[in-house]
Length: 246
Image (cartoon, rainbow, N blue to C red; front, side):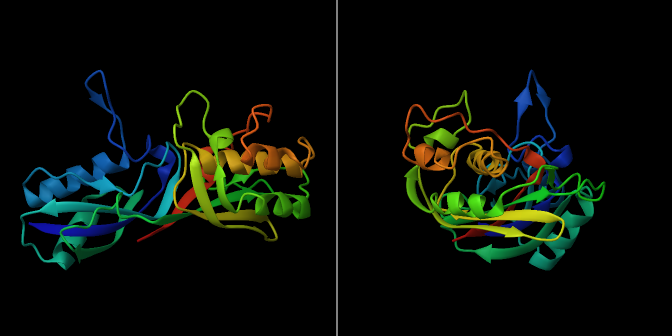
């Protein structure tokens, strides 16, 4: 039995997330389902693709990592070429390598790096990959507040409403805001993320940068204060999974 490690890039616009979803017998279009169909056609055996984690509907990936186990001895270069020839234009396997039998894309992941892109000017060319925020943003204040989130905190305040986070303590090892001519990028590295955590951090920082929240908001949220305001959620299309570290 071989274990293969895949690095996958995809445009999440027309996918309902990474994970296979079935509703009333109908299967939704997900990245995992598309990959499994391609490999099952090539290998002629039932294949389960396991990703490093879920990405929501509309979220993109440049460096999603997944694994599969197969009895096939098809050479890697042939397998990669065949799989990519069967995949739609919005999914591409960037690499496929042999991994140890113990490798597990989700359980062995130590940190992940996400990037969120904010467009300062309306552009059809970036509309699928960046959140257009036309308001003037106070970058100095946003950077100062972002630094408060680095370290280990209870991120319950940044967890999506309606879902349960029993263990919300996570460690952010890096959080960087960069301003470019037409855009702002936020890069965040952490040992894990609660549901919609990155999008809620971005939404809160933008609200602070627009002057809608006082500068102490982030600090109160990181402390888990029950009176802290509800974190606004940035839209999914600005978010991209850049890298998974093992």
